[in-house]
Image (cartoon, rainbow, N blue to C red; front, side, top):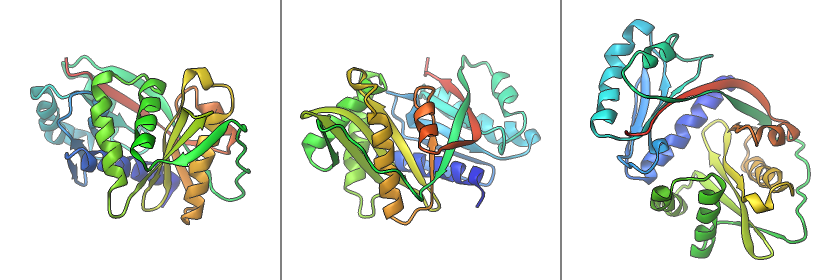
Length: 263
């Protein structure tokens, strides 16, 4: 499997997990892959993850999905991987009478997992794998503040986190750092079939600039390596991009996104 395919597989596995853990449905066909949890708190809980069809077939397979989201007023996103998706998808979506919020060119990055640097943490920091209710509450608080998530999404993220820890064969592993006992940074490892994904890397604003984002990314990479993975995948924000470069990640493709807020 080439690296671009690994990126796509990782995204599909992540959102399949979101759908499963939030009691949603995940629909995968040769031409399009999409999911819906029916949650209205955040656009990332409903969306189209992959579109791989001929441009002339877009209307036939996409219109009903658009109508399903919009008629129910479900916030959602539509991902477009220009290097491997459907030519003209962006133009097709923009032709619809929908007020999109767009992002362009999100770096999709990959790194091998051999010869990882040693983990170095300030002496004030304790690192744990999330298990207890206290760990879950602290992890959730960091997620909400670090990513500035809308408060209505707290209970949905809480369900995702709690359910991910009780699966018989968990695919998500969550990490939490505390600075002198106070939660300060988090990350998540996703175990996909062919590559490990790294998600939810964030540090609370008052603790930034101390190497915690790099450390929490590295912790997930080390856990992936111990599990036998050879390749790791992540989707970089502008603030995270230079940190990931330091850890050996390279951009292999980019993703565009079209977001509808439900209004």
